Length: 296
Ligand SMILES: Nc1nc2c(ncn2[C@@H]2O[C@H](COP(=O)(O)OP(=O)(O)OP(=O)(O)O)[C@@H](O)[C@H]2O)c(=O)[nH]1
Ligand SMILES: [Mg+2]
Image 1 (cartoon, rainbow, N blue to C red):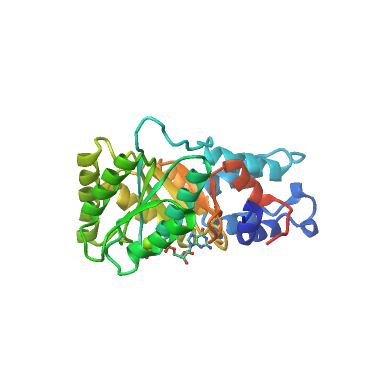
Image 2: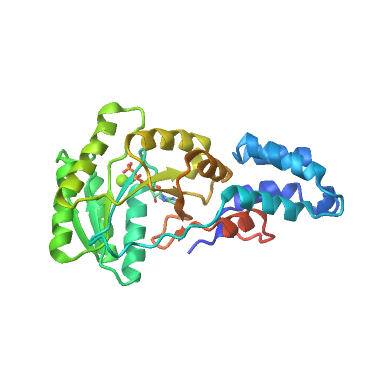
């Protein structure tokens, strides 16, 4: 499994430069350099200004590194650890996002995680847009060893989701994790398909989907927030998954996700492996940004 510290090495190495011993002790850090580096890491400008103000007015003997850590943690708010509800029978989760953001991989990782928690998950491949859309998830379901319902290319995505829920109800699977086709937030016909999928789910299992999570690619930085805002207008999101945090030098955009979307970050993808998905933990995230570890 990829660790937080190693996954965030790119952003951390940028931040570390301003805290290096050659600059003097941490109390002497160059605030101008820090400002530039935080902006480059896609930390929102408003938060960077607030941080700079606080650091400049801090008493000289205070550790500015500790102060910075506290300010960043404040900006991320409380951790909200997601627990699968046990009263939905089954809980239905719809994953959505733009092309290539990591939806299918995240669906598989979630199925593996829930299976290890002793549940019986079902994976639903409702990506009928691409030839390999559904079959890619079917392969994952075989690897994870869980139930699967998919559809042929060109099949009605809403119908596939309906069938999956019906099947899950018959077999007692819970949760149902529904992967969907990648769609650009600007493409109207594909965006219009999303409410149809939700209506079909609700018809078969009233109240579903119970969870709608958007999967965001961390390497897109601030652009991912713009995409999420548009998806949120079409279907209210109940969670965000950030993928590809490993290798991203724009990890600071998580602060924008928190402040601009008001949707909890549920999980983060820290690698391509099936175990590389972890609950979002603000403390681990901020510590990985400042840690002294050089691994990765
Ligand atoms: N490094 C890294 N790669 C990831 C992560 N999550 C997904 N990927 C990779 O991103 C690529 C796209 O992943 P998919 O899961 O197929 O993305 P998708 O959103 O289903 O793509 P479409 O269905 O084509 O829209 C694959 O090569 C994955 O291995 C992650 O957390 N870290
Ligand atoms: Mg996919």
